[in-house]
Length: 314
Image 1 (tube, rainbow, N blue to C red):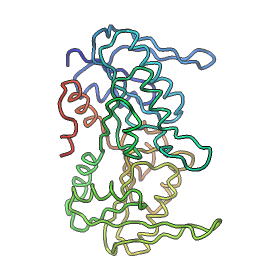
Image 2 (tube, rainbow, N blue to C red):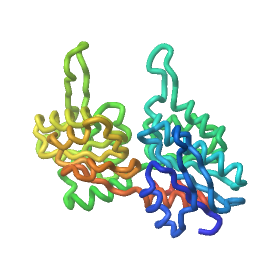
Image 3 (cartoon, rainbow, N blue to C red):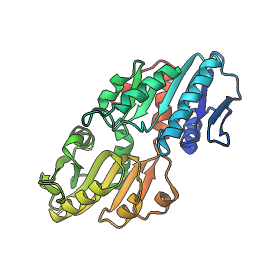
């Protein structure tokens, strides 16, 4: 696509290469390196004057390093006279800090949105924001893509008979997301209601919905430690579920999460490649990665052509 440049940060180069391949566009030559004290330096090695530019970079671990790369790459493009700069952030790392959780605490998602805007980005493209209202934190156009179409395709490929499938939200907060996916595959919906009666006691999980004999699919946007997911799977099986799988957009999987999931009763955890999978994830027997490159690539193409992005999800 003439007049368009795709740049890769260091967080997930494999995904960026897949997006570029989908678009039939070679990656723009760009050097992102560090000095001895870990200070980040960026040099755009191709001419971008008057070009429509897209920086693909998830702000995953190490989040602060990858965020600084986005900011510095944006500044480099702005100073190189790029016509438009779109920050493509498949995983927006500070999204869980979208409100004040207590006295004297920050709203870090808003701060990061301000940083990206002030650095010179003209648009933002992201996937499954933890909270939809974060779009309003940006003072520039922001498109929030949904991984649901990719997940639905995979679910249909893996389950020829969907009549026995039940979609489950692992908490009350994720009901809207789970209901949207359940509607796409014409499945019933169940909810895991978790509560801690008093400090120091383990969570009690109640299942809202009849899951007996069903193949349950847990749906959420982020899996981090994996504790809630594993506990929800165990609670569903105790209520008579036939088996439990999970489809999660962002596989943060910090600490001992991979080992915890591998040892759990989950039949399978399916994550997208918004975050580059680690070696432990690739070797796990019950974690599978599906690519979201085609969805992001199509959204980039439509943005470049000034076409509708929302129609991707109609």
